[in-house]
Image (cartoon, rainbow, N blue to C red; front, side, top):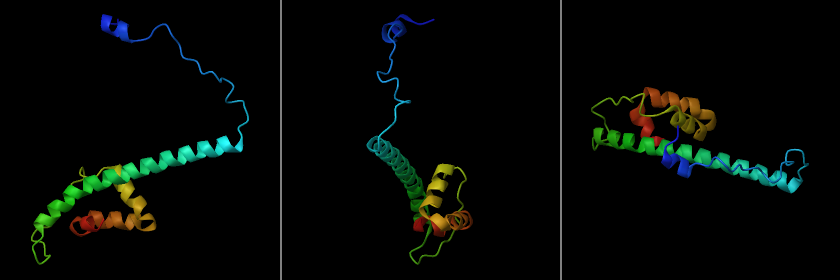
Length: 121
């Protein structure tokens, strides 16, 4: 059952139908193909950039914590352990993507020695 407020806002009468229903059957020209390909590539790039920015936002507070633990001489009095929940799978994939062929190696260094790897990443 819908409330009176729902009924005043939701549409039960009008249906939207695309004007060009034969778009799927129509042969596309090269300009349209290139435009669609460009839009898809821009979307993918935007998603990758957002994932990278998210990884940076997640790493910055960790780098600040490490900075506090390190003396003026650069020697750490404490061993820093990375909480498994501090970086998500998306962040780890973004880091691996940035370092391309060395991505697995960087992730391994991040797991073994986060105090040295995080400020560099």
